[in-house]
Image 1 (cartoon, each protein chain N blue to C red):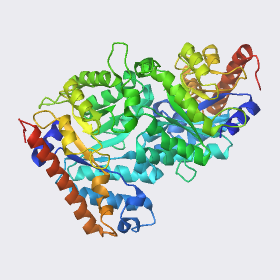
Image 2 (image 1 turned 45 degrees about the vertical axis):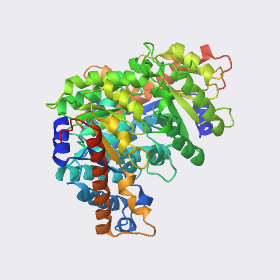
Image 3 (image 1 turned 30 degrees about the vertical axis):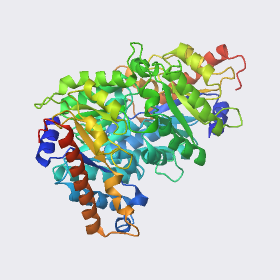
Length: 301
Length: 301
């Protein structure tokens, strides 16, 4: 799966992805008024976002929480969004941050990643709090079905240090130890470009830590949230990449999806909204690509 | 919400709850053959489990992963299971171990706990890996809508020590620090029995740590998984209780739901299955109650 991701990054010259976060009160009125069924409105909006960016980005990242809040109809819209993204040649990173133990973890892995599961995403974000035995069922499904994972290592929020900076008996921080685990897991799922399908979530808001984690996980892709709205910018994300300009996926959601709200009194129609989403996604690509050209001496695309 | 829980424990003389984990290949054949729609089979089974235990236990704990694996139809069955449990006077602990940051955490809290959300559970399990700011949206919904949380502090699996035993800069383990946080959060949601609606998940498999955590969280309820199938027994769970016999909910899933598989070549019909589930739930109640009578000098029920 990592090879398809890298092929797409090279072809589109873009390591950026767009989140699909249907926050109801932020959606343009033109979508909220489409149907009495909220799920239909959301699906229509999500399809328009995909149409707007499908030749700009390599992947989209639907955020499960914003679908789950609409119950089973929201979950159906999520499944249809994933299928629509696939039809449009996009990879799907299912941002659900799931985890549990034993058979329960296996059920989550099947639900989100398995080829014969209801979602069939390409990558899944996973929470490591319960320890390595809780990660194994996800690794097995990823390996069997050729899928990928992004394991939370260092998130972008202010409190992320509270647990990730705690010290293990051997002197490593939890964060460093997780990086070593991810590195080790990665060996089983290496692709032809020398990168693994097992990656890490590393926030864009802590560039120094991101640089240190980059050195600990050379063959891993980082999923980097927090670009734009959360305070990360093109310079702070350069530390997440290797010198070939690979090794990171930069994700933006609000900064692209709800940019239209920054224009006073603007309620765009669907065409204008798609155009705005596309423009913002293009702008992000240009900003990140320019930062990579400055920072990477061996940019491979 | 904690007062309703305690009233039920006292009335039924039972601090035990039953998990609702629809693992398809373990369901008796009589349920798997009810319909071509898997979700209908599961809902029928879940209703039978609720019918079997509704006068024995105070609450049921549907495990979201086992519904999620069936996609949107599974989620609908989950919502209907929660509604059915409520109709039968049971409280519902939604075991979803959710978390994320900011608006995403708020969306999960709304989806699972909010009164006007699609699930409207009474308690939710929450993963603390992302730190205290990620827990706040859940605490707000719990406080506003009179619901409760169980925050993962020490889980029952072999790897649970890997992160929870790491040391914070002040010398506390992550586990102890989490206990202090839960204790502090609890102050805002205290009930009339002196217990809080904000509790902790503490595994039954580590009795010494459970006893230490009990001392750190005197006013919190522990949700204690791992009874039966995972190796916890009636003696090991006594450490999770206060001397009044309150302060813990002991959960069993497989040991009750799939006990029938321990009888060679038995494929019970629905009536026999309900009877078996009821017998196992009663047996667990008697075992745990006997252990509490031995261990608690001030048993309050």
